[in-house]
Length: 116
Image (cartoon, rainbow, N blue to C red; front, side):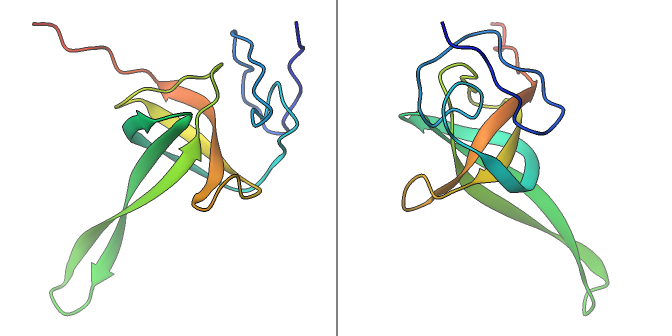
């Protein structure tokens, strides 16, 4: 059984354990740099989620705010296991693959499945 390590930000450690080398809590991965909070819009890839968050920019010509969406791929360790529509916090890390530079460190709010 591995122990969890302090990753440097005030985030509670996950209750599950994993043997993933790319997990910031149980592996050798270090987190640094930028931190974002967004919503998981896809969890169909293995150990990867796509996280999206909106930003507003003022359009001078039309005098209105325009909404843009940023999307990034993030590593999803087994001990965190974020699913679709969860609100998560992601943090920057070294490049994990061609397009993955972030890792999920916390689930802010878990969405309950819709009742029928």
